[in-house]
Length: 253
Ligand SMILES: [Fe+2]
Image (cartoon, helix red, strand yellow):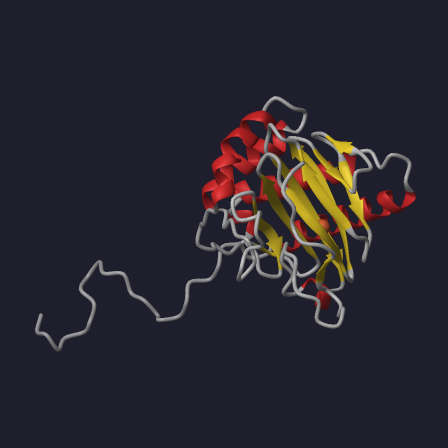
């Protein structure tokens, strides 16, 4: 074949030049099972008799159910780690021996694909080695979802996550491993469910001897969910969808 002959040889792959379509959720069973286990957490966890929490849990699971029926695309963001992910082995090991083992195992199966990040241009002092999050589903993926953001947040032992609020969003955390407190009003062990309505200021502290892995879910309007990150942003007039800090990070007690 001459240098000018561009015709493919027999057996050569032929590229159309168009980008490969993203795989659908039905073709990525590890991600589908993870969503299924998340649905079941929100289906079978107790609401503790709270009608507000019950309504939030229903909203999250109905959104996940619709998402699974819609068979969305699954992106493959570049896997990334941050220093706190050195604690992920310990967190997952702990989670295998709890009733939450089914979802913890599902997380293990996608862990090499997770994009752990801070979400900050400049990480607040005290958080750089003690905090990171990885999205599972949302407007920016990995599972494309305009109506709910699901993710994981990992805290090192002794982390204090500063007070913040989510405007326009209702948030819940499910404690998967470790133990955390929020606003000093309770201690949340694996299986505990924490509910933060829009604009509710909350500050999280983490036990000194074990990391804590939480699953978070955010529901709200599509505009409010777009461009959201699990971060403390700078207040810019208190617009919808911003996470507003109340105080800077502190060292653990
Ligand atoms: Fe929060």
